[in-house]
Length: 85
Image (tube, rainbow, N blue to C red; front, side):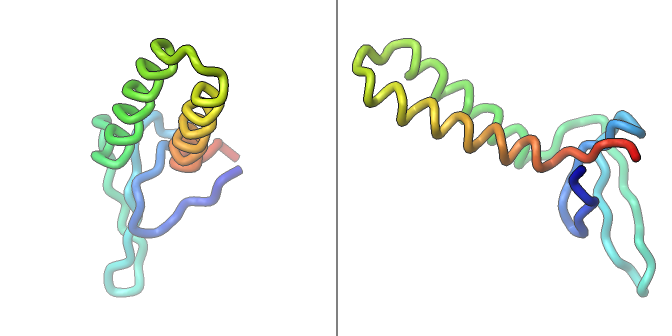
């Protein structure tokens, strides 16, 4: 399970929303959003672009490189998620 991080957007399965946690005056302040954060959308768009290239690419080695890039981006996206306890 990923632990909530300060000053980063995370997806909370428990709440069904995006959560941003920051410290103000020594206390955790939570901001919720149903709209995905910019960082998540950028990663998603990059995966879409790489997938299109992957479908068009005929050379095996280039396909492997594109696939690995997609998996790295997917991992970053999954790190933005926390599971319910």
